[in-house]
Image (cartoon, rainbow, N blue to C red; front, side, top):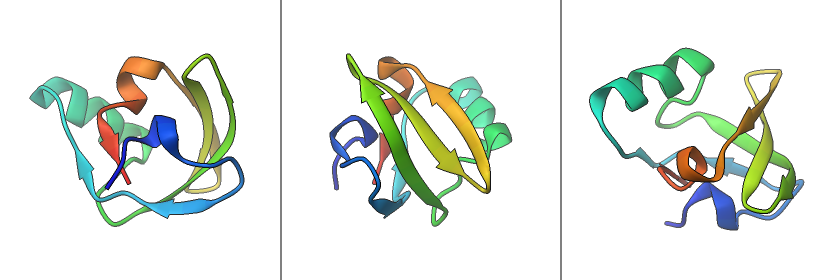
Length: 70
């Protein structure tokens, strides 16, 4: 398991765990980040990532991406 910030661009990963406070988990879940779901990093700039989740492109800050374990 590793944080989403370390995932390779273009590689599909499965979300294993989402850390953080309950409101952060709920926010990420509303965006489509659910345990067992697929996520693909499109690009990463200074730790901030753009990902494909459920046919949507979402920008995630470095802090949030470190809470998503793949």
